[in-house]
Amino acid sequence: MVGLGMVVLGIVSSQAFAQNEVLPASVSGPSGPKITWPHPFLFAGLGVNGAGYSSLSGSAGAGLRIDARRLIWEAGASYDTARKANDNTIDNQKGHSRRLESSLYYRFHSGWFAGGGAGWTQLSTTNYSKQALRPSIGGGKDYFHKQCAAEDCVDEWSMRWQVDYTLKGAEHVDPKGCTVPNGQCTNDLQGPMLSLYLPSPALARHVFWRTTLGVYTLHTTVTSTDPSLTALQKGQRSVTAAFDFAMMYRF
Image (tube, rainbow, N blue to C red; front, side):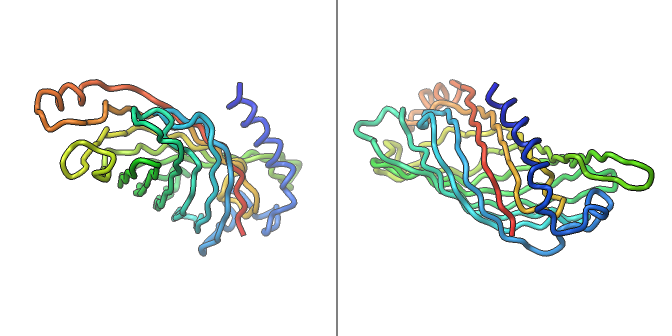
């Protein structure tokens, strides 16, 4: 119900912010000009978390993006108040996450786009810090709905959806928070993330709503160098999810 409410709110908001177009309505859309040079953007939102993190968190960030006719590029940095609430350590009361990421996609004549990227994350807690560098691959499509009378068309609403699969990457936990030599306490998190933008960033608008839903698999954190115990922990896999809703402003 929460996700459905967000989608409805986003559709309503995309119409409410139609006056924010910086290009004439008559040329916006799939056949009109795109954002061909980097535009900065800001965003802030709320998240619902799994994987032992605090159930609710806030996030904020900034970045640059291009939405040209063939090229889609985004790079950004963000801060999230999510902390580890259940990691079997004592008095781990504080924490936050930081992230740097960049992705690049090619848009085909059909309107579909595909590409990939990479992201660096750092979880800092009272007891330890953990870093990960993970690549991703994915793609998606923009949709535009117009209401036409004779030769005049008006954009009613638009959206972009995309799916990016986060691959296993390199993980490292500092020795203070890990009993394994060299701090290699890993869990090989990976899985798909669905993103929905309202309206589509391909249009020259300022305000966007972005909803993301990630579903990830991971194994029990490796806490031993014993081969049999390590194999057992890697075989104990579980599924977790994270939901995020943010408002973005592009300059």
